[in-house]
View 1 (cartoon, rainbow, N blue to C red):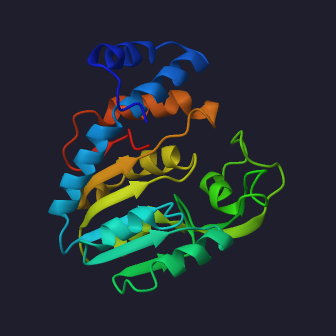
View 2 (spheres, rainbow, N blue to C red):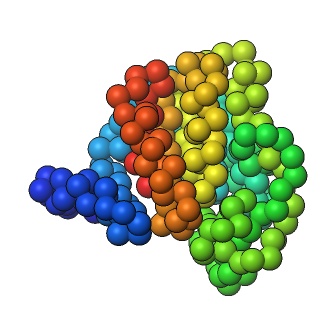
Length: 231
């Protein structure tokens, strides 16, 4: 993380992130990484306010953030579609009765979709699991799908809950743009307190323009508060 970035460097990154094409994406990523300490502090504050509430971890991977949520929340829903990774996740949360693992991806509609993994997955599955995606165009995955996985209609999932949601963390390897676009058009959005999103323009360049548009759109929103600088 670029925790040592000075205020002048951060300003430089923000300004240069508006450059066209991959240069802008490069500096957007640097600006995001420079903000990580602030984002961590914001997340900690949101967690404190989430006591006895509902948290959702989209792209739970091995459960690091799921466990942090479970330490304060009444209920945590942890979504993870990769069959290998979800087995590790279940093991990580086996002693946490307030965590419900959902073996599925979160998207805008329900269905079965191909899952793509890193070419290095067989060599180092733990590290390789970080790259698993439903986005075939992602630059660090193989062309051949590794599995067919379930996708849940996530806006519908939120609507079916009987309570508001305190925090949603979204790290779904390129799928976050379409999902956030859909949530912004759905009345269910007002039932969410905080959304923390990691974007993946460096690995899915075609998403850059849409991601930047989303950043501008959510700036200043308070219900929910949406942070797109998760890293």
